[in-house]
Structures are given as C-alpha cells and as structure tokens.
Length: 474
Ligand code: PA5
Image (tube, rainbow, N blue to C red; front, side, top):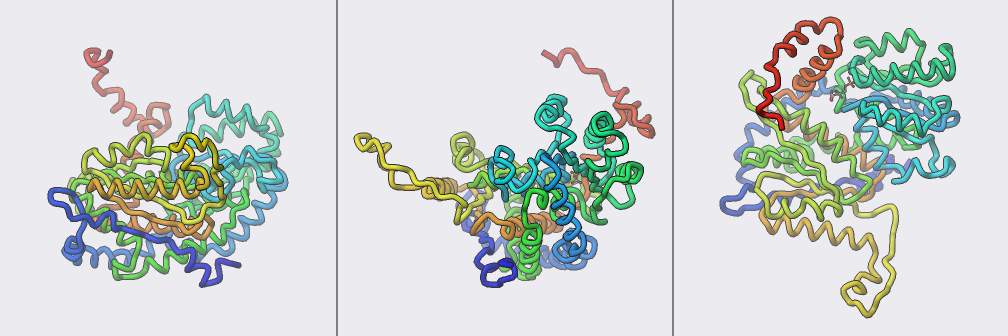
C-alpha cells in the first residue's frame, strides 16, 4: 500500500505557511515572534492539557483503534454497492458535514451524474435539512426499493433526523413491506443512549456505533463518515493512515514544529487583536465543502459564553466560507480593503487530478490571446498566488495550507489537523470545545413547540414570551 511507504507519506505531507500572519504593520493586527514568546506559559499549559486529556478525547484514537470495524464497514459497503443504486444519508450537523466534505474531496466532482460503472458505487445523497421541498425532490429522483438509507445520529434523538426516518420507514413499509425494512436501513448511533438504538433493535437494523467520547463534529473518521465513504469507493484505510500521520506531527510539544498548535496559536493571537472572523477559501472545488465542515467544527467548538471557570467571555471566531477563484469576484474586495477583523485560510493544491490546456486563439485580440498556451492549472495557481499577494499587501492576515494532491491520505491529515487545532484553541481560550449548549437550547425549544413529552415547562416558557410587537414588523 502506498500509504505504508514513508517516502510517499512524506511527499504527501501538508504544508502550513503562515508568513501571511507574521505582519508587523503599525496599528494593524498581526502576529510577531514576540507575541508567541509572550504566550509561552499559556502554550505550555495548553500542551500539557492536551496530553492529559488525550484519554478523554476519544476521537484522537480513531486512527489506531478501528481495525475490526473498518473491515466490517468495507464488507458492508461491498454488499451495499453491489445491490443498491442509491445510498442516502439521513443526518445533520456533525452527522452530515463530514460525509459531504470527504465525498466531494475524493470522488468525481459530478459523481452522481456518471454511469454506475464509472462511479464505482451507488449515487450518494446526504439529506441534512427538513425542507419539505427537498424531501419531495429526493423522492422524485430515487426509487426507495433500490436505495439503502444510512440514518446517522449520535444522540439518537435529533428531531430532523427522526422525522426523516419516520418518513422513510413509512414509505418502505408501503413499498417493500414491514418485514424487509431492515434490508434498506443501516443505523449509526450511540451504543446505548438515545432512541435510534431502540428503533434499530426493534426493526432488527444493522447498526454501527459512534464510539463513546467522539462528539458529532469530531466524528468523520469513525463509522459516521467511513461507511458512506467506503460505499462510494473511498479508501478509508488510507484516510485513517493520513490522520495517523498527522497525529504523529501533532504530538510535537514545540509549537514551532506542531502545525495544528501553531495554527491555533496564530488564530488565538489574531482573536485577541480583534480578528473575530475566520474565512476559509479553498482553491479547489474538491475542497469546497471542507469549508462547511470546518465552519461547524470551529463555530460550535469555540463559540462559547462561559470559560471553564464560569466567567462570561463570549468568545469565538465567525467562520465564513469562500471558494477560490469564484469568490474573488464577490468577497475579495472586502478581504483586501475592508476592516481588519479576519484571518483568511487559503487551501491550495500542488497537483490537480486533471490538466486542462487553454488553446491558442483570437490572436488579433491580445487581451484574450495571452491566455492561450497556458492551462487552467496555471491560471488557478496564478490567481491563488495573486490573491494571497493582494491580501498580504493590504495588511490583512492569512495563512495557506497546501495539499500536495487531494487524496485519501492528505484529506485524512487535513481533517485531523483541524480537529487538533480546534481542541488546542479551546485550551488557549480556556473553554470547553466539546459541548454545544447553544445548539441544545434550540433543539429543546423545537421539542417543546412540537409537543415532545417532558418539555412542557419549556413550552410554557416559549408561550410566555412577549408577543411580537406590531410596531417592529413591516
Ligand atoms: O457537533 C455536534 O454534536 C452537533 O452539531 C451534532 O452533530 C448535531 O446536532 C447532530 O446531532 P446528532 O448526531 O446527535 O443527531
């Protein structure tokens, strides 16, 4: 296997270039070596905490402790791929964003439009919303009899996912009969907690488990993400090998040698200087949804009201998604001339999986003709460099993470690095990066509004809210 070859691994190592952060312009936010030295005590404490809490951060062990389940996933995926035309994930948040990001990164960009023999797996749909039009649209394009549904919920009770499940179970009852529902659904959930496990047992549904201590947004590298990936032909062993390779880099205690720690330190210093926006701008369509996955990881983990001592801190950086070069024509004006309140993370790729030459033509129009003889590869590369240059020249902060290629090994590294970066940033901010009380509040209010037993008091609280003031409605 190529991912066992150390020379190949090293050639595929991600590069983190933070020159664009080390800007020392008077009156502008920027990071200098002295800022990092001044944080030495905090960095050392956070490094110790990461070591001491490693046992609780079960997601850190996923590259090491899944041999058996990986074999089971591959076997299951083979069966699904042979028998079904469609694989539909029902899930939301951490139970959907990882599968979407990894599929987009590692499969053909028009995967669902290819004929089956070229796809190498069933069509994939990840349904992470309860817009009724979207459910209707899905059912217009799939035949449930030819579909495997993977219902994913760590908590086993999320209303959106449970509603989708109720719809699908009822449809399957009508179409394939009660006794054969279990041939069309795979559950992924907690081994003990929640309602999905109860339903899975009742319907005798094949179940994969989200390991204890692996939270939703840190779950892509467990069965939550691995099953959909394997069904679509992604090499999940290589994905995990990439995560392991990154873990080995992220145990370095010297922050100057640890890419995830250094990225977190840079963001932390930038936040202290008022940069409360984190823009992710991949220069590759394949990495477009990495920005969505990162947005949840960064926002939900770090957006916190209280620190670990219970003080109100209201911290966090607002994630913004952009795509190079597309958003050069919509957002870059703001990133070069707008307020100094953001850090831009460029994601670049050395070698795209396709080469596209730009033919010569229109020699009488020099402003067009100069493009001929170049390639789209050169063009996108030049545009990335030009945007990095413009952002840096304007005194705005950025860093660039480069993947030598987009493959399972580099994507595994990228996911794992951002997870460690997030956990380390949580330590620097002295907050709990692994809870989400703000999300729970909204979930509970939904339960109350729809009459879930046990939420009567919350319903009363909602009913007692001051009624909408007509003065403020147009
Ligand atoms: O990161 C998290 O824990 C959340 O965003 C969850 O992923 C999201 O709310 C979905 O939860 P569940 O997987 O329990 O249905």
